[in-house]
Image 1: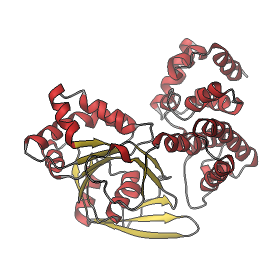
Image 2: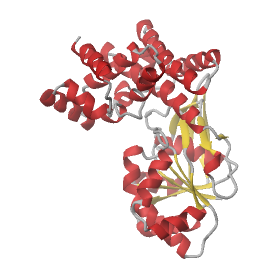
Image 3: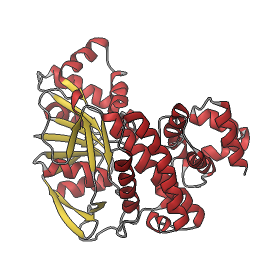
Length: 380
């Protein structure tokens, strides 16, 4: 079995690429980093350092790489692939969609009508559905209909902390990951046989798991980063070690968790146990996870379907407490980082138009009372 994976960065190599390789699948990475491409093709393997109670290195083999802008190379891979996956970041999906659309058409025109499944492994809700829409923008109605017959677009939820790590001189491709990983896919969206991939879990209720991860791991991680930055620490593990920050992070995840319990009928005690597991992951002493890395791109993280606004609107839907989530929105609006274009954009917009206009523009919120509460909290 062959897979084409877009994105040879830390998540691509340390998470999805490793799971595929561990399952006996030959992985071809597509990326724009020529140095990494050359290293993969030369070494044909790399190490993944897994850190939890202890630290160990596992080797990933059966890999190669191509340049993601090499049109002919990408088309050739798509023509013969059994699976296409991505870990490029939500903002990049739209850039690779036109070439993948062209490659899918050529695949079918070449006579290959074997089932192919596409899975976008991104930190976003229904990322593959978004990717599919971008791909279909490039196709005629008849092309769309043909692709629908043979290509499955499978939404997924992914969860593994993969921070940047110091380069290992003897293996520059080595990546450090936490021991915990979760890759949950919507089994109803596959075409043909569902691939047997170690570590990939199947569900017919994906949104419950997507939102559980988004409202817990992503929300808590972001709050920890913002409070850590305010406290002047560099690493998430340092931030969560501060009692007041740990308490605020936990309280925020309890607010978002109350939405999940109402919406999906989660067992409250089981979800509180899940929250404690997340807090323990943040405190992993082996992970050097920079607060600015976690806090970056505030415009994306303030969007209506992301980790702050979506649980916040859920509290309105069910009449639940939300003061900690409101504080999180305020901290996102106040996030400043001159090396982050989105933070610069947001700060400039607030300076020119005011915070209320920024809330309306970037969050999609329409509830005037909630907007007033955020504006008031921002002023304080």
